[in-house]
Image 1 (cartoon, rainbow, N blue to C red):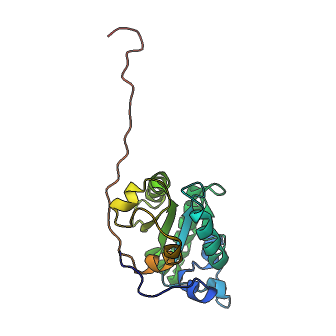
Image 2: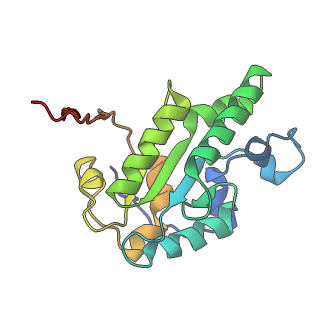
Image 3: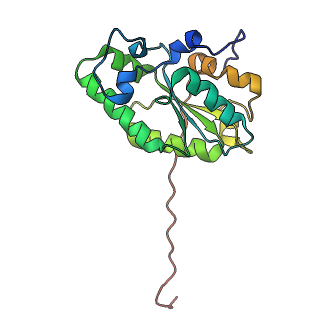
Length: 197
């Protein structure tokens, strides 16, 4: 992962490049006159777990929500990530089927940001795989938990500083995607319920 080369200040102007057009979040018709329907070139959806680590997740949530709005930034204790992902995926596919080039671009460039620990990251990665099934969007970890082993193994480090929180959008734009293997394990109890061995 490349470190951002300059100090980044998240403002309405600088965060515009990370916008998902509002009509794709609500499945309405695009309003080409509305600045909220202008796509960014690095669109992102963020999921944050405020119970992970210290108050960094809350700080990042407030920062991103103020600039991107509640349609793109989600506290996982308040909104269910699977519903958010399903809704967005459905809206994107419906607009792509109608020949919407903006929806195609957002679908191609979308990054899912996950701020939390290993459990939050694994859960969201699983949901992305279940919802998208093919051509999965990249998932970018923001390590805020206590262990952060998965984030560390993916090259994102084990913890972010307050200053690095401000650079999360640049990491979304400038980071490199890497494929990872994912498994599901089912444990079955083979105990003989009749009492016989």
